[in-house]
Length: 282
Image: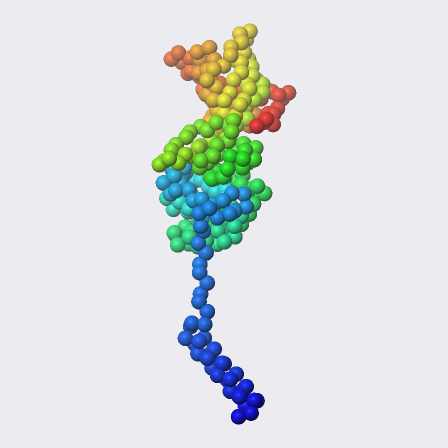
């Protein structure tokens, strides 16, 4: 047999073999679906999942409910976002830099039946606006928490922030919980109250260190230091001379009630025009 017919015969045989392999489905194995692995490298941190028991506790601490919009910073495998929707009825969003994690979480949300209530976006959390959140969750490093702290403190007063394992430095948590050796911290973004406030019968002068408040209350000629000053979101509480004050801060006004002995009455204050709310020095 000449070389040319032999070459045609070999080519024909090879073609037939490839066709057979293709029709029997053993030509190429299907690619393995992506599975996140603990300790895999990320943009800013390695990835480790938050235990499900702690996810539940974090969302309970933040009192998440159907009216909330939860945003998870660095959402990883999506479990916090999915739990917020499935178990607590909230809308939720995850911000994640790894596109494979985003796809994985999106598929997981579909399997969990909450695809209509959640979404995951591929983005840098330091370049993304999350001001629409009523609850922010995260499992980052303390250095990253501190970098985010000015942005978080600029969120709407009353926004709840929960962190796994890492704190916010001088901004002390409003609540701490531990589950099987794992710690969660809760902060409630405080309103800005530092400055001078005019009362019908006097003046309230306040200094603020995150949610802690101190200052003086002047009624007529009498000046009394305030005690136990505390903010919980937009709710301000303090005492002065044995009288207890509580009020809701609404931008440049405070309205609430005052208790003295067995008597209770209303009180209000307006921020003085020459004492605008200062930018926080956090």
